[in-house]
Image (cartoon, rainbow over all chains, first blue to last red; front, side, top):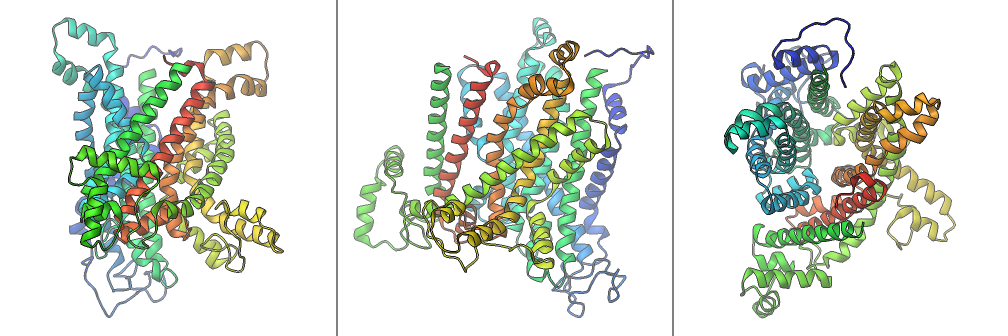
Length: 297
Length: 338
């Protein structure tokens, strides 16, 4: 709906700059972006910035309380766990596994989804209809259940978790991208471009992809929050990352039996998972609103 | 409408067929001997092996094996569980009602809390109260459910000691199983301590229901809020306002009826999320439902049980999805595409 505007300002900035302008007007979204970049840098830099080796077991420092209590040491800000491993280093390392791995799985799933979605979106008739029905089948099975089944077939482990999450995220990507492409194909400029003699590939790469990338970003942000939660949940159930690996979900289930002695070791990984998912959701919501506002203006 | 129903039923049939093919192929995909995976027998002597190969048509083509598999599934012979050597279908009927009970209450809670809050949040989107509802919804949406459950257990069961931390009913009470739904069973039983047992069952239900309902409630709030805001911009709302209806009348006659239609479909979609989250909730609260049973089966590498669990859960989810979609179409003429 076109809104009445008092000042006839001309907005000739690039779409990206317009998007950023709308995005940065929302404080919550900016906060989410800062949180997101912090997690991202932690997950990349984790091996270099951990103060201690996350797997080193200091047997003279078992279950050290956090440094804000009387008995804590300043070298171990969050204290140590029941095997004497530094919790802060393990949290930082966990960013690589839970957050970093989630980003990688989403990227892999996105690439596969883009290929399959393009294939499904550009084709018509029986092939497309068959694809739709197949997707309907897989989409109704919850992603975590799908991941659990895949892990049951492949066996537990971090690598298999990644495969399971990639496969479990795939249907929603294919579905979303296919719908976005189908919507674009109805536009007049596509028809005009076709009349100019463009083939399918040219239409896809020059018109459709530049027009749907915003939608793809929103899709990826939703998938990313699912991926983090799924990886952590599988780790918590003992089906994902195995014991010594410092994955946040696995750390929670490891520390469950010492929850009365050291509640911090359960509280902090959970808080981190929560903060990571929250940052992704804030950015995703902000993007959605920014895209909508940019379209309206 | 008739054609639409037929098409949906046909789609349901196709989807279930695909599901059964997938379940059948799991017998080969799982590690180990396919014969053991299909039958669930731990030890098979040679005479029995011959007999089973004959019955399962294992020496024939995959198509024949699949037909034999399908016949067994339809006849109710789902094989045995590796760990208990009991018929799987019987085990599933014992654990399924517990999950259904939990998910039903959580779904109802999310519906009755989420929809009004969502409408409230949409009424004055810039008011502080409404913003805080949206903010809370975002927080609940991002909470990892297992951590949330642990926090609540720490607070209400360990620190305050108000509510039990797991199970369905205290060991003091003995209630004969009839339907498998605890509250109904207690009401059906004629014991002296019926009231006390009912109270105890409620106390056991509270935390798991709260935990399980958190995510769907927040999704419902966000969904209803967006739908409401969308509807509120439409021209027919302006018309209704212009002809002199007050806020409540506009809301009831034009706003709600249009905004709540997609909610019907949302319930179906929520159900599949709920079943997944129920698995985690059941593990934490040691709730004897199908989710915990399935996770235990994975730990025990109980492949026939995983296969059966997949089939029963997916069939349930798909059927409910289909039902809500049909209901949605029934109420919303715009959604009918012939």
